[in-house]
Image (cartoon, rainbow, N blue to C red):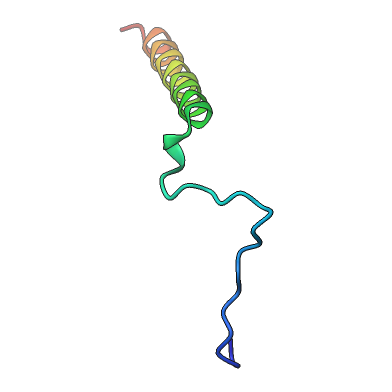
Length: 54
């Protein structure tokens, strides 16, 4: 800030960890999202292969 005062994080709000993937629920969500993306990519690949006759 221009006056040299830094913002202070309110004590009542929990701070997020530096590495958000350390939280088990976030890890599970990330794994599920990656799995869904992989399944979509595999399905698209198979559909393309079937469309070209390979």
